Length: 387
Image: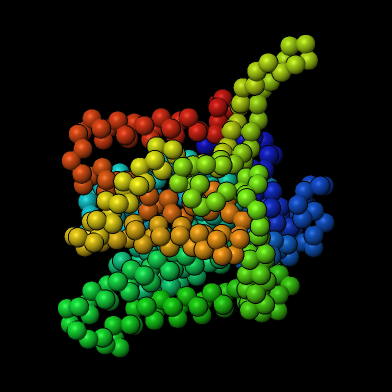
């Protein structure tokens, strides 16, 4: 709904990715915009692979250079992500009801909702990795590797999802070894199939994309450029502006103003009140993230004591997509932002669903919690006045 609103306004990092897609599509970038004057057809946003920008450019060609054209790829990716989370729950042996609850919690998280309807790369990278997780649970390892490659060709941080899938495989292998007391070469074939498919497809398609959309002669030089750029985003002091530490994300700290349009009321040339019409914020649903400590402790207990497959997925997925930022900040002094936690939100939603389904909380508490999630979603809903 209202993908075109506010009219002609770019939201947050759309200022980079939509303008880059315009250049790729051979469209004009408005004067003063990022990448204005860049060579038509060549992706100017080289810190990220070209695939995401190429998808937005294709959408612009189909739907026009406006909000719908900019954002449809993210909308599709968000819907795929919801279906993938449901499929992960079911493939882990859990009920359709639990899958529906997890999807509902994820859908009503503000961060996933906002990134599911703006023209940035994050949701387009997350969706294929979630599909890969489902394929791995179903035993389709080569196809999982292909899906991982798609996610990485949109944004390199998708590699954290690959780490989560491989960590789950490694734990299954250790469990199997405890029963059989031996490792066989055949036991490593699934991981090998994923890795070989992932690496070869990533390099081959990146090479093809670079030949078409960039000036890099080979995928290795582009990879080196992307890694160098990413590690160069450093700070030696405390975060400033919209930047934040990973541990601040646990309390929804340092929300980011993506786009705010307000109607001001003035008296004698002084603003006495300001009523927002549009308020896109980079922030988690506070009720959902507030339950994270209890939810993940329960998931860890279910995984450790009962070998619950879904609980193990929650713990590994959240750890792989969240904990690396501690290393990047503490060792590499990397600048980080709250929206970096987006890939971990599906695991949070599933963990909270397990908390509600596997504990003996009174029904009134469970219902009240779900209502609280809904009320927080309304409080953060970006359209404060209906267009």
